[in-house]
Length: 149
Image (cartoon, rainbow, N blue to C red; front, side, top):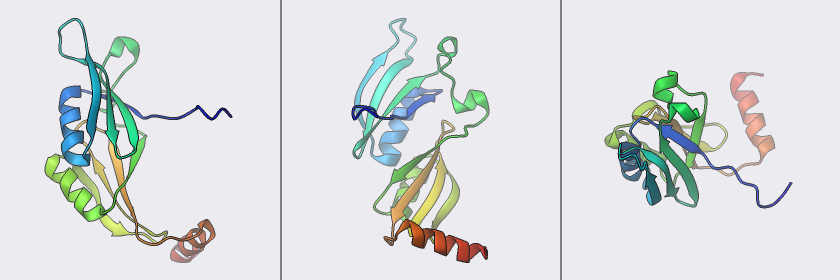
């Protein structure tokens, strides 16, 4: 495998400019740049946002190119995981910015405190805070014990 390979989430949103504003308020995103459609319709053809050490791409819907948002599709099967220092504070901030809290913060047997929110554009985000470091074997042992397996 080449070392120059990487994966970057590319979010398609109905209302790209509003999505950028939401991600800035909810997750502390920093807009790196945006390109707007030269037709003058205001759609974002491509934008890049930095959240911590990660970059995500974003565009408005372009159905003729297959760029469809979760709103149009009726949901999404993909979730994003955002590592945070304080899950409770991050959840409160996202909710105040307009996210729907699908699962309130809770400490899990595998050492994370996490929550799940859905942004106003249909994308789901796991907000995860490590509260206890443990080996993969210990994670499995605790999960198995928790479920009685």
